[in-house]
Image 1 (cartoon, rainbow, N blue to C red):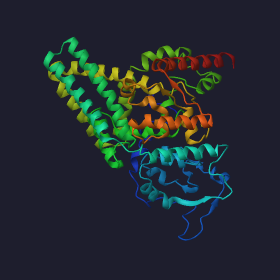
Image 2: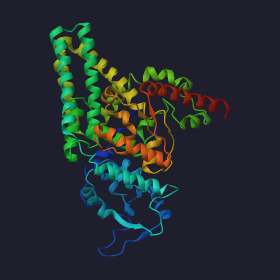
Image 3: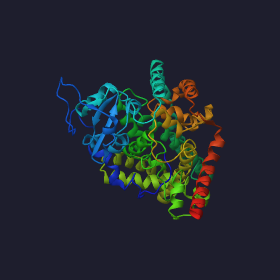
Length: 473
Protein backbone atom coordinates (compact mmCIF):
# COMPACT_ATOMS: atom_id res chain seq x y z
CA UNK A 1 0.00 0.00 0.00
CA UNK A 2 1.06 3.61 0.10
CA UNK A 3 3.10 5.99 2.15
CA UNK A 4 3.32 9.77 1.97
CA UNK A 5 5.50 11.12 -0.79
CA UNK A 6 5.49 14.39 -2.67
CA UNK A 7 3.65 14.32 -5.99
CA UNK A 8 6.55 15.60 -8.06
CA UNK A 9 9.36 13.56 -6.57
CA UNK A 10 12.63 13.27 -8.42
CA UNK A 11 13.24 9.56 -7.94
CA UNK A 12 13.80 7.12 -10.77
CA UNK A 13 10.49 5.50 -9.99
CA UNK A 14 8.29 8.52 -10.65
CA UNK A 15 9.07 11.63 -12.67
CA UNK A 16 5.64 13.24 -12.88
CA UNK A 17 2.15 12.42 -14.10
CA UNK A 18 3.34 11.81 -17.65
CA UNK A 19 5.27 8.84 -16.27
CA UNK A 20 2.04 7.36 -14.95
CA UNK A 21 0.51 7.48 -18.45
CA UNK A 22 2.50 4.44 -19.49
CA UNK A 23 -0.29 2.36 -18.00
CA UNK A 24 -2.95 4.08 -20.08
CA UNK A 25 -1.29 4.86 -23.41
CA UNK A 26 -1.64 1.53 -25.14
CA UNK A 27 -4.77 0.16 -23.50
CA UNK A 28 -5.19 -3.58 -23.58
CA UNK A 29 -3.17 -4.93 -26.46
CA UNK A 30 -4.53 -7.57 -28.78
CA UNK A 31 -3.02 -11.03 -28.86
CA UNK A 32 -0.39 -11.00 -31.55
CA UNK A 33 -0.41 -7.23 -31.92
CA UNK A 34 2.82 -5.30 -32.25
CA UNK A 35 5.36 -7.38 -30.36
CA UNK A 36 8.25 -7.14 -32.79
CA UNK A 37 10.75 -9.24 -30.78
CA UNK A 38 14.35 -8.55 -31.75
CA UNK A 39 15.29 -12.16 -32.14
CA UNK A 40 12.13 -12.79 -34.12
CA UNK A 41 9.57 -15.47 -33.30
CA UNK A 42 10.59 -18.95 -34.24
CA UNK A 43 8.87 -20.28 -37.39
CA UNK A 44 6.03 -22.69 -36.78
CA UNK A 45 7.33 -26.20 -36.29
CA UNK A 46 10.95 -25.09 -36.00
CA UNK A 47 12.94 -25.83 -32.84
CA UNK A 48 13.06 -22.92 -30.40
CA UNK A 49 16.40 -21.17 -29.97
CA UNK A 50 18.22 -22.00 -26.75
CA UNK A 51 19.38 -19.32 -24.30
CA UNK A 52 21.49 -19.27 -21.19
CA UNK A 53 20.96 -16.99 -18.20
CA UNK A 54 24.14 -15.06 -18.98
CA UNK A 55 22.56 -14.07 -22.30
CA UNK A 56 19.20 -13.21 -20.76
CA UNK A 57 20.79 -11.00 -18.09
CA UNK A 58 22.05 -8.67 -20.83
CA UNK A 59 18.46 -7.75 -21.75
CA UNK A 60 17.45 -5.58 -18.82
CA UNK A 61 17.80 -2.17 -20.42
CA UNK A 62 15.34 0.56 -21.44
CA UNK A 63 13.85 -0.60 -24.71
CA UNK A 64 15.47 -4.02 -24.48
CA UNK A 65 13.80 -6.38 -22.02
CA UNK A 66 13.43 -10.15 -21.91
CA UNK A 67 11.82 -12.28 -19.26
CA UNK A 68 11.35 -15.97 -18.54
CA UNK A 69 8.04 -17.69 -17.80
CA UNK A 70 7.86 -21.46 -17.33
CA UNK A 71 11.35 -21.82 -18.87
CA UNK A 72 10.34 -20.00 -22.05
CA UNK A 73 12.02 -16.75 -23.06
CA UNK A 74 9.97 -13.76 -24.20
CA UNK A 75 11.07 -10.45 -25.70
CA UNK A 76 8.75 -7.81 -24.22
CA UNK A 77 10.80 -4.82 -25.38
CA UNK A 78 8.17 -3.23 -27.61
CA UNK A 79 5.02 -4.85 -26.26
CA UNK A 80 5.71 -3.66 -22.71
CA UNK A 81 4.27 -0.25 -23.59
CA UNK A 82 0.96 -1.99 -24.33
CA UNK A 83 0.93 -4.11 -21.20
CA UNK A 84 -2.40 -3.44 -19.43
CA UNK A 85 -0.63 -3.07 -16.09
CA UNK A 86 1.94 -0.64 -17.50
CA UNK A 87 5.45 -1.12 -18.81
CA UNK A 88 7.00 -0.50 -15.39
CA UNK A 89 5.17 -3.41 -13.78
CA UNK A 90 6.22 -5.99 -16.34
CA UNK A 91 9.64 -4.37 -16.74
CA UNK A 92 10.43 -4.92 -13.06
CA UNK A 93 10.70 -8.65 -13.86
CA UNK A 94 12.96 -8.33 -16.92
CA UNK A 95 15.92 -10.73 -17.08
CA UNK A 96 14.27 -12.81 -14.33
CA UNK A 97 12.13 -15.89 -13.97
CA UNK A 98 8.67 -14.28 -13.76
CA UNK A 99 6.71 -17.54 -13.53
CA UNK A 100 5.31 -17.03 -10.03
CA UNK A 101 4.55 -13.35 -10.64
CA UNK A 102 2.74 -14.34 -13.85
CA UNK A 103 0.54 -16.76 -11.91
CA UNK A 104 0.03 -14.34 -9.02
CA UNK A 105 -1.26 -11.44 -11.10
CA UNK A 106 -3.48 -13.18 -13.65
CA UNK A 107 -6.79 -14.95 -13.25
CA UNK A 108 -7.31 -16.44 -16.70
CA UNK A 109 -3.92 -17.84 -17.66
CA UNK A 110 -5.29 -19.39 -20.86
CA UNK A 111 -6.36 -15.97 -22.11
CA UNK A 112 -3.14 -14.22 -21.08
CA UNK A 113 -0.97 -16.83 -22.80
CA UNK A 114 -2.43 -15.63 -26.10
CA UNK A 115 -0.52 -12.41 -25.58
CA UNK A 116 2.70 -14.31 -24.92
CA UNK A 117 2.73 -16.45 -28.06
CA UNK A 118 3.97 -13.79 -30.50
CA UNK A 119 6.59 -12.65 -27.98
CA UNK A 120 8.19 -16.10 -27.65
CA UNK A 121 11.79 -16.14 -28.89
CA UNK A 122 13.24 -19.26 -27.29
CA UNK A 123 13.65 -21.33 -24.17
CA UNK A 124 16.18 -22.00 -21.48
CA UNK A 125 18.91 -24.48 -22.30
CA UNK A 126 18.14 -27.90 -20.76
CA UNK A 127 21.11 -27.69 -18.40
CA UNK A 128 20.12 -24.23 -17.14
CA UNK A 129 18.20 -23.95 -13.84
CA UNK A 130 14.70 -22.52 -14.02
CA UNK A 131 15.77 -19.55 -11.89
CA UNK A 132 18.80 -17.33 -12.20
CA UNK A 133 21.02 -16.85 -9.19
CA UNK A 134 21.29 -18.68 -5.88
CA UNK A 135 17.61 -19.40 -5.35
CA UNK A 136 16.22 -22.41 -3.50
CA UNK A 137 14.67 -24.66 -6.15
CA UNK A 138 12.93 -26.83 -3.54
CA UNK A 139 11.38 -23.80 -1.87
CA UNK A 140 10.04 -22.60 -5.22
CA UNK A 141 8.67 -26.03 -6.03
CA UNK A 142 6.98 -26.26 -2.63
CA UNK A 143 5.44 -22.81 -3.02
CA UNK A 144 3.95 -23.80 -6.36
CA UNK A 145 2.56 -26.94 -4.73
CA UNK A 146 1.09 -24.70 -2.01
CA UNK A 147 -0.60 -22.55 -4.62
CA UNK A 148 -1.97 -25.65 -6.34
CA UNK A 149 -3.33 -26.90 -3.00
CA UNK A 150 -5.09 -23.56 -2.50
CA UNK A 151 -6.60 -23.82 -5.96
CA UNK A 152 -7.75 -27.38 -5.26
CA UNK A 153 -9.41 -26.11 -2.06
CA UNK A 154 -11.20 -23.50 -4.23
CA UNK A 155 -9.70 -20.69 -2.17
CA UNK A 156 -9.56 -18.45 -5.24
CA UNK A 157 -13.35 -18.56 -5.59
CA UNK A 158 -15.18 -15.58 -4.10
CA UNK A 159 -18.29 -15.56 -1.94
CA UNK A 160 -20.34 -12.90 -3.73
CA UNK A 161 -22.69 -12.58 -0.74
CA UNK A 162 -19.74 -11.54 1.44
CA UNK A 163 -18.77 -8.75 -0.93
CA UNK A 164 -22.39 -7.71 -1.52
CA UNK A 165 -22.75 -7.20 2.22
CA UNK A 166 -19.56 -5.14 2.25
CA UNK A 167 -20.94 -2.84 -0.43
CA UNK A 168 -24.28 -2.72 1.35
CA UNK A 169 -22.79 -1.62 4.66
CA UNK A 170 -20.77 1.10 2.87
CA UNK A 171 -23.89 2.49 1.24
CA UNK A 172 -25.74 2.24 4.57
CA UNK A 173 -23.06 4.32 6.30
CA UNK A 174 -23.22 6.95 3.56
CA UNK A 175 -26.98 7.19 4.04
CA UNK A 176 -26.74 7.19 7.84
CA UNK A 177 -24.29 10.11 7.83
CA UNK A 178 -26.63 12.18 5.66
CA UNK A 179 -29.68 11.27 7.76
CA UNK A 180 -27.91 12.41 10.94
CA UNK A 181 -27.40 15.87 9.49
CA UNK A 182 -30.86 15.93 7.91
CA UNK A 183 -32.70 14.91 11.09
CA UNK A 184 -30.53 16.59 13.75
CA UNK A 185 -29.37 19.61 11.81
CA UNK A 186 -25.79 20.78 11.14
CA UNK A 187 -24.75 21.07 14.78
CA UNK A 188 -21.42 20.05 16.25
CA UNK A 189 -22.57 16.63 17.49
CA UNK A 190 -24.27 15.57 14.28
CA UNK A 191 -21.41 16.96 12.17
CA UNK A 192 -18.71 15.14 14.13
CA UNK A 193 -20.68 11.88 14.03
CA UNK A 194 -21.32 12.29 10.30
CA UNK A 195 -17.62 12.94 9.62
CA UNK A 196 -16.61 9.83 11.60
CA UNK A 197 -19.15 7.64 9.82
CA UNK A 198 -18.14 8.98 6.41
CA UNK A 199 -14.46 8.40 7.20
CA UNK A 200 -15.19 4.78 8.13
CA UNK A 201 -17.21 4.40 4.95
CA UNK A 202 -14.35 5.84 2.89
CA UNK A 203 -11.89 3.49 4.60
CA UNK A 204 -14.06 0.50 3.75
CA UNK A 205 -14.31 1.78 0.17
CA UNK A 206 -10.52 1.61 -0.04
CA UNK A 207 -10.71 -2.04 0.98
CA UNK A 208 -13.46 -2.95 -1.46
CA UNK A 209 -11.88 -1.21 -4.45
CA UNK A 210 -8.62 -2.93 -3.48
CA UNK A 211 -10.37 -6.31 -3.75
CA UNK A 212 -11.79 -5.35 -7.14
CA UNK A 213 -8.45 -4.05 -8.37
CA UNK A 214 -6.92 -7.45 -7.68
CA UNK A 215 -9.79 -9.09 -9.60
CA UNK A 216 -10.63 -11.21 -6.56
CA UNK A 217 -14.43 -10.87 -6.63
CA UNK A 218 -15.82 -11.59 -10.11
CA UNK A 219 -14.64 -14.35 -12.46
CA UNK A 220 -14.10 -11.88 -15.31
CA UNK A 221 -11.43 -9.18 -15.06
CA UNK A 222 -13.66 -6.76 -16.95
CA UNK A 223 -16.44 -7.06 -14.36
CA UNK A 224 -13.98 -6.36 -11.57
CA UNK A 225 -12.63 -3.31 -13.38
CA UNK A 226 -16.05 -1.79 -14.05
CA UNK A 227 -17.08 -2.33 -10.43
CA UNK A 228 -13.78 -0.86 -9.23
CA UNK A 229 -14.39 2.27 -11.33
CA UNK A 230 -17.75 2.71 -9.61
CA UNK A 231 -16.40 2.22 -6.08
CA UNK A 232 -13.21 4.20 -6.64
CA UNK A 233 -14.86 6.91 -8.72
CA UNK A 234 -18.43 7.42 -7.54
CA UNK A 235 -17.89 6.45 -3.89
CA UNK A 236 -14.37 7.89 -3.41
CA UNK A 237 -13.56 10.40 -6.16
CA UNK A 238 -10.33 8.73 -7.32
CA UNK A 239 -9.07 7.05 -10.48
CA UNK A 240 -9.02 3.25 -10.59
CA UNK A 241 -6.32 3.31 -13.28
CA UNK A 242 -4.08 5.54 -11.14
CA UNK A 243 -4.43 3.25 -8.13
CA UNK A 244 -3.77 0.04 -10.07
CA UNK A 245 -0.69 1.44 -11.77
CA UNK A 246 1.11 2.26 -8.55
CA UNK A 247 -0.32 -0.54 -6.39
CA UNK A 248 0.58 -3.40 -8.73
CA UNK A 249 4.20 -2.24 -8.72
CA UNK A 250 4.13 -2.45 -4.94
CA UNK A 251 3.00 -6.07 -5.16
CA UNK A 252 5.56 -6.97 -7.82
CA UNK A 253 8.54 -5.70 -5.84
CA UNK A 254 7.47 -4.80 -2.27
CA UNK A 255 9.83 -2.54 -0.31
CA UNK A 256 12.31 -2.35 -3.22
CA UNK A 257 13.64 1.13 -3.98
CA UNK A 258 12.80 2.51 -7.44
CA UNK A 259 10.37 -0.36 -8.05
CA UNK A 260 7.86 -0.02 -5.20
CA UNK A 261 6.36 3.51 -5.24
CA UNK A 262 5.25 3.09 -1.63
CA UNK A 263 8.78 3.22 -0.24
CA UNK A 264 10.04 5.90 -2.59
CA UNK A 265 9.41 8.62 -0.03
CA UNK A 266 12.83 10.29 0.13
CA UNK A 267 13.67 13.10 0.62
CA UNK A 268 10.67 13.52 2.95
CA UNK A 269 11.30 10.31 4.92
CA UNK A 270 14.26 7.94 4.91
CA UNK A 271 13.55 4.23 5.11
CA UNK A 272 15.82 1.21 5.28
CA UNK A 273 19.02 1.38 3.25
CA UNK A 274 18.36 4.97 2.12
CA UNK A 275 19.27 6.13 5.64
CA UNK A 276 22.90 5.06 5.24
CA UNK A 277 23.08 6.32 1.66
CA UNK A 278 21.83 9.80 2.55
CA UNK A 279 24.11 9.94 5.58
CA UNK A 280 27.25 8.98 3.67
CA UNK A 281 26.47 11.55 0.96
CA UNK A 282 25.88 14.24 3.62
CA UNK A 283 22.34 14.91 2.41
CA UNK A 284 20.21 16.79 4.89
CA UNK A 285 17.03 18.17 3.38
CA UNK A 286 15.11 17.63 6.63
CA UNK A 287 16.06 16.74 10.23
CA UNK A 288 15.74 13.01 9.60
CA UNK A 289 16.74 12.11 13.13
CA UNK A 290 13.37 13.64 14.08
CA UNK A 291 11.33 12.10 11.26
CA UNK A 292 9.45 9.92 13.73
CA UNK A 293 8.09 13.16 15.19
CA UNK A 294 7.26 15.17 12.07
CA UNK A 295 5.65 12.03 10.69
CA UNK A 296 2.63 12.88 12.87
CA UNK A 297 2.36 16.30 11.23
CA UNK A 298 2.68 15.42 7.53
CA UNK A 299 2.20 11.64 7.35
CA UNK A 300 -1.20 10.45 8.51
CA UNK A 301 -3.01 13.82 8.22
CA UNK A 302 -2.03 14.75 4.67
CA UNK A 303 -1.53 11.60 2.58
CA UNK A 304 -5.07 11.30 1.22
CA UNK A 305 -6.02 14.98 1.45
CA UNK A 306 -2.96 16.39 -0.32
CA UNK A 307 -0.67 13.81 -1.91
CA UNK A 308 -3.33 11.47 -3.27
CA UNK A 309 -5.71 14.22 -4.37
CA UNK A 310 -3.03 16.11 -6.32
CA UNK A 311 -1.38 13.06 -7.85
CA UNK A 312 -4.72 11.50 -8.75
CA UNK A 313 -6.01 14.66 -10.47
CA UNK A 314 -2.73 15.15 -12.34
CA UNK A 315 -2.87 11.56 -13.55
CA UNK A 316 -6.42 11.82 -14.87
CA UNK A 317 -5.77 15.12 -16.67
CA UNK A 318 -2.35 14.41 -18.16
CA UNK A 319 -3.17 10.82 -19.09
CA UNK A 320 -6.59 11.85 -20.41
CA UNK A 321 -8.49 9.30 -18.35
CA UNK A 322 -11.79 11.00 -19.07
CA UNK A 323 -13.98 8.14 -17.83
CA UNK A 324 -12.22 8.15 -14.47
CA UNK A 325 -12.51 11.94 -14.38
CA UNK A 326 -16.27 11.74 -14.94
CA UNK A 327 -16.62 9.15 -12.19
CA UNK A 328 -14.63 11.36 -9.81
CA UNK A 329 -16.73 14.39 -10.77
CA UNK A 330 -19.86 12.42 -9.93
CA UNK A 331 -18.51 11.84 -6.41
CA UNK A 332 -17.82 15.52 -5.77
CA UNK A 333 -21.16 16.54 -7.27
CA UNK A 334 -23.03 14.09 -5.06
CA UNK A 335 -21.12 15.09 -1.94
CA UNK A 336 -21.61 18.83 -2.38
CA UNK A 337 -25.24 18.53 -3.50
CA UNK A 338 -25.96 16.35 -0.46
CA UNK A 339 -24.40 18.60 2.20
CA UNK A 340 -24.35 22.16 0.84
CA UNK A 341 -28.06 22.72 1.72
CA UNK A 342 -27.05 22.26 5.38
CA UNK A 343 -23.54 23.76 5.52
CA UNK A 344 -23.21 25.96 2.46
CA UNK A 345 -20.20 25.71 0.14
CA UNK A 346 -17.56 26.58 2.77
CA UNK A 347 -19.01 24.31 5.45
CA UNK A 348 -19.30 21.41 3.01
CA UNK A 349 -15.68 21.89 1.99
CA UNK A 350 -14.65 21.79 5.66
CA UNK A 351 -16.67 18.59 6.17
CA UNK A 352 -14.93 17.06 3.15
CA UNK A 353 -11.49 18.02 4.51
CA UNK A 354 -12.36 16.56 7.92
CA UNK A 355 -13.41 13.26 6.33
CA UNK A 356 -10.26 13.07 4.20
CA UNK A 357 -7.98 13.78 7.18
CA UNK A 358 -9.66 11.11 9.32
CA UNK A 359 -9.60 8.66 6.44
CA UNK A 360 -5.93 9.44 5.80
CA UNK A 361 -5.01 8.49 9.37
CA UNK A 362 -6.67 5.13 8.88
CA UNK A 363 -4.94 4.59 5.55
CA UNK A 364 -1.40 5.31 6.73
CA UNK A 365 -1.53 3.36 9.98
CA UNK A 366 -3.36 0.33 8.59
CA UNK A 367 -1.39 -0.03 5.38
CA UNK A 368 2.06 0.68 6.78
CA UNK A 369 1.96 -1.45 9.94
CA UNK A 370 2.74 -4.49 7.75
CA UNK A 371 5.56 -2.97 5.66
CA UNK A 372 7.52 -0.05 7.13
CA UNK A 373 9.08 -2.09 9.99
CA UNK A 374 10.24 -4.76 7.52
CA UNK A 375 13.29 -4.92 5.27
CA UNK A 376 13.47 -1.99 2.82
CA UNK A 377 16.27 -1.64 0.29
CA UNK A 378 17.54 -2.38 -3.19
CA UNK A 379 16.71 -5.33 -5.41
CA UNK A 380 17.91 -8.66 -3.99
CA UNK A 381 16.54 -10.87 -6.82
CA UNK A 382 14.82 -13.29 -4.46
CA UNK A 383 12.20 -15.80 -5.46
CA UNK A 384 8.55 -14.68 -5.27
CA UNK A 385 7.71 -16.20 -1.89
CA UNK A 386 10.91 -15.09 -0.15
CA UNK A 387 10.64 -11.53 -1.47
CA UNK A 388 7.05 -11.18 -0.29
CA UNK A 389 7.77 -12.59 3.17
CA UNK A 390 10.80 -10.34 3.63
CA UNK A 391 8.60 -7.27 3.11
CA UNK A 392 5.43 -8.21 5.01
CA UNK A 393 4.12 -9.31 8.38
CA UNK A 394 0.71 -10.12 9.81
CA UNK A 395 -1.31 -8.62 12.65
CA UNK A 396 -3.19 -10.86 15.08
CA UNK A 397 -6.68 -11.49 13.71
CA UNK A 398 -10.03 -10.81 15.35
CA UNK A 399 -13.45 -10.11 13.91
CA UNK A 400 -12.98 -6.39 14.53
CA UNK A 401 -9.41 -6.18 13.18
CA UNK A 402 -10.35 -8.26 10.13
CA UNK A 403 -13.18 -5.84 9.32
CA UNK A 404 -11.40 -2.63 10.33
CA UNK A 405 -8.30 -3.41 8.26
CA UNK A 406 -10.11 -4.97 5.32
CA UNK A 407 -8.28 -8.23 6.15
CA UNK A 408 -4.96 -6.50 5.46
CA UNK A 409 -3.86 -7.90 8.80
CA UNK A 410 -3.30 -11.05 6.68
CA UNK A 411 -0.72 -9.20 4.62
CA UNK A 412 1.50 -12.25 4.12
CA UNK A 413 -1.28 -14.30 2.56
CA UNK A 414 -2.45 -11.33 0.52
CA UNK A 415 1.01 -10.72 -0.94
CA UNK A 416 1.62 -14.36 -1.74
CA UNK A 417 -1.79 -14.69 -3.42
CA UNK A 418 -2.98 -11.22 -4.55
CA UNK A 419 -6.05 -12.50 -6.43
CA UNK A 420 -7.33 -14.65 -3.54
CA UNK A 421 -10.59 -13.32 -2.01
CA UNK A 422 -9.81 -11.97 1.44
CA UNK A 423 -12.39 -14.09 3.26
CA UNK A 424 -10.20 -17.13 2.49
CA UNK A 425 -7.00 -15.83 4.10
CA UNK A 426 -7.79 -17.55 7.40
CA UNK A 427 -8.15 -20.88 5.60
CA UNK A 428 -4.88 -20.66 3.68
CA UNK A 429 -2.87 -19.25 6.63
CA UNK A 430 -2.08 -22.67 8.25
CA UNK A 431 -0.70 -23.92 4.92
CA UNK A 432 1.47 -20.82 4.60
CA UNK A 433 2.75 -21.21 8.16
CA UNK A 434 3.72 -24.83 7.48
CA UNK A 435 5.49 -23.81 4.28
CA UNK A 436 7.45 -21.10 6.12
CA UNK A 437 8.38 -23.44 8.96
CA UNK A 438 9.71 -26.03 6.51
CA UNK A 439 11.99 -23.54 4.76
CA UNK A 440 13.02 -21.37 7.70
CA UNK A 441 11.12 -18.31 6.50
CA UNK A 442 9.99 -15.87 9.19
CA UNK A 443 6.18 -15.85 9.46
CA UNK A 444 5.76 -12.80 11.71
CA UNK A 445 2.50 -12.03 13.52
CA UNK A 446 2.19 -9.01 15.83
CA UNK A 447 -0.45 -7.60 18.18
CA UNK A 448 -2.29 -4.66 16.60
CA UNK A 449 -0.92 -1.95 18.91
CA UNK A 450 2.62 -3.31 18.63
CA UNK A 451 2.39 -3.12 14.86
CA UNK A 452 1.37 0.55 15.05
CA UNK A 453 4.15 1.45 17.49
CA UNK A 454 6.69 -0.35 15.29
CA UNK A 455 6.06 2.18 12.51
CA UNK A 456 7.36 4.97 14.74
CA UNK A 457 10.20 2.81 16.04
CA UNK A 458 11.27 2.01 12.48
CA UNK A 459 11.25 5.69 11.47
CA UNK A 460 13.31 6.59 14.55
CA UNK A 461 15.80 3.80 13.89
CA UNK A 462 16.26 4.92 10.27
CA UNK A 463 16.71 8.53 11.42
CA UNK A 464 19.34 7.52 13.97
CA UNK A 465 21.22 5.49 11.36
CA UNK A 466 21.20 8.50 9.03
CA UNK A 467 22.54 10.78 11.77
CA UNK A 468 25.33 8.37 12.66
CA UNK A 469 26.38 8.01 9.01
CA UNK A 470 26.09 11.78 8.49
CA UNK A 471 28.35 12.61 11.42
CA UNK A 472 30.93 9.83 11.25
CA UNK A 473 31.32 8.67 7.65
